[in-house]
Length: 402
Image 1 (cartoon, helix red, strand yellow):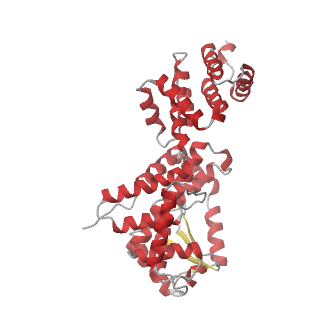
Image 2 (cartoon, helix red, strand yellow; image 1 turned 135 degrees about the vertical axis):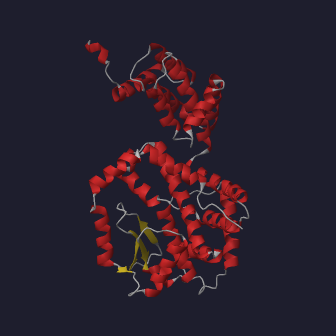
Image 3 (cartoon, helix red, strand yellow; image 1 turned 60 degrees about the vertical axis):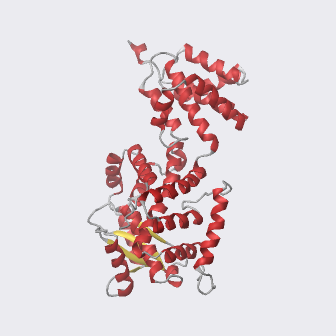
């Protein structure tokens, strides 16, 4: 019997990382205290006042379809379904913060003008998948902690960007499980993308799949980019096809690795691999100069390192076991070969690590000047950069009060 895991490894990893970084055990309680029922009530009021609620009396057929999908996915938490008069071909889920209050799934009326019953099952299953995976809950918490995304550290914003794209592939799997009709899943995605009634346009599923394969090649050759919250359609369709057709978990995982590799290139660039080795090795060298490496320095290294790789602690430990000086020199050369304008940024990072523990060690200052000189940066520029870091990060020595 064919049994494949609907969860995606990277999705789980990113969810756990974001959960821990947000200190979600505590901040989620604070969210509930601060927002209380306000957001849930406001959302529900909008739905109740401006949308049509789906129930077994008013919209019996569609209600039956929603309940069929919910039961098939074995999701036992209550959901209220609403239809909103909106021509945009879209749907969304909203996770309730109260276990006794139903979640909300909103379906735009534009979907009903384009989709058949099986395609609607995919859409509903996709939105329930977001609830199962707690995607809407973690995103809501993220924006509670970082209402201004510009204030979010780079290592967090990059994880969020990748998480949002991977989460759509995870939700697509539940959409497929809801209808078990790959053709319907594919046509629904293209209908959402184009807003076209494909049957009236005489577009066949075979043509769509052939076109998708050609467009996927474009991304496989590292030519494509993605700036949206959703994966590009060629990747979504291919990922869902893998899930529907793979005979074993091993085959599914192998195929997904290639697709996820493409998605990571949208977030992490080729130079980032070299930057991550530089950040780790430079951090280790700087932290070891005074012979008193401490948690503040480690935290500064990991925070910077996390912006350029998914597993910063493992990366740091791996480099620590090798020849740190060689890794440092090789990474500097590799970065400058790609982008010589990075010289100032490299010095800036070394300065940040030196100031992370709040103590100014003369040997660290000497290291910074020598490193900057090796890159052709004048001492005056280095001094000004250190002064700027001093103004921003300096913490007075409390021992001076004794």
